[in-house]
Image (cartoon, rainbow, N blue to C red; front, top):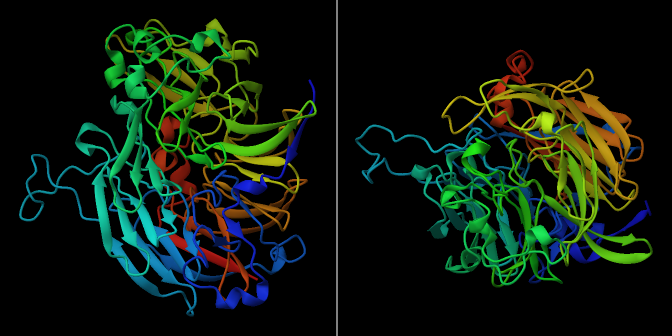
Length: 589
């Protein structure tokens, strides 16, 4: 195997540097359109490439021992505190789980007091009656609690807020005033909105959740200024609705043919076929492509949906202006295990066999790490990054996994046991980070397998999770994409359900379900610092520069999600190590 050399993705950093001496004078909005200070964190992954890399270096291996909590903020909510805050200038924006709220905190004043608060209106009761004077309506919920994975910021001074009830809201960043609100999905049908939006120029792009309810997936672009819908591309169905012209991927025969989003289903199953778009979105402004994954097909019983079930459990590249599919790659055809492909795709410029390649790196739930030419959708590399036994390998010539028959879904009532990974995947939606200092990807992982059983006539299987090989249920790894090997690995007692943060200080931060926020050395994985939060961490740490010119680290603490709800038996002991909570913690030197 020829080595792959990683390079810095310079063209994808949203911000531009400002001298530290000017940091105290940083405005509350970018200094010029399209420019964000290197000290800000204006999007879910900080940059459009989803690297979750901060160029700040005041907190480093020499100073980390001095890192202390400097202030905290209670969100007033319990349940899953996923995602992370945004920082634009001297304002921090914090979101909560349902009922969704947004707080703007003034970083220029001691203790960061509240500038404004937005409380989303509660959805009406079924039948459209007002909630006032009537019984409370059923609460919108996804498969895995009522969390929200974050906000987005547009340079016109708008904060884009996804509401679990299926609406997308634009707020005035200065006042919290609602500017526009649009309905993206109907929660009564099981479709919710939990993923963080993506801002691509003057478009705000969002997906939808609810594959487990038979929701047909789509990705939608709205005009950031007015809320007008610009395009919608479906995950299943005819090419005209998927927004697909010509072959989905000319490199692979299994991806060629008309209307594969219909013919690969054997009937009309595609109409409620899942493939929702609940994960993170990345964007290449040079190619003008938005990259997104799709969730598992529905129903969960594979016998009820014969065929490859395109385009579920796939990665799609769409033209940002039109939504048209430039290429698609199905990672797990006829997904029998419920993996889905909605995990994030991190963009990096690589050199493969001496040739520069615009690459996409994707750590899929199915246990394989993919390196793909993001301009063409051609597979460059696919290797296991954790315990995997359902497939022996991914065939490089066809991009199709070579399945091990003894680990397929059962055809009768007898369960299949010890399938690895479990349906939650080797990695779920906890995002990885990439550091140009080392060329390594830092990946929070699960170490779980499962028993799978089908009940006669049931649409969904019974899933029982269990610890995977080894002594722990979690891992945190540094992945070397040049050799498709693990550079180092730290074992964790429970799954690492929080995202990773890499910084120019040579550190990687991540949280644990027990509530530890940890800092480790990027090159060795050696633990250098940790702090016990009041609740388990399933959110994503960020780094930012305060108005005082100092670097800070922030993270949301609040156990919930699939992890906090018992996780199909994977974490029966979670209540003994952490309780629910809702606290923002900010650390400084």
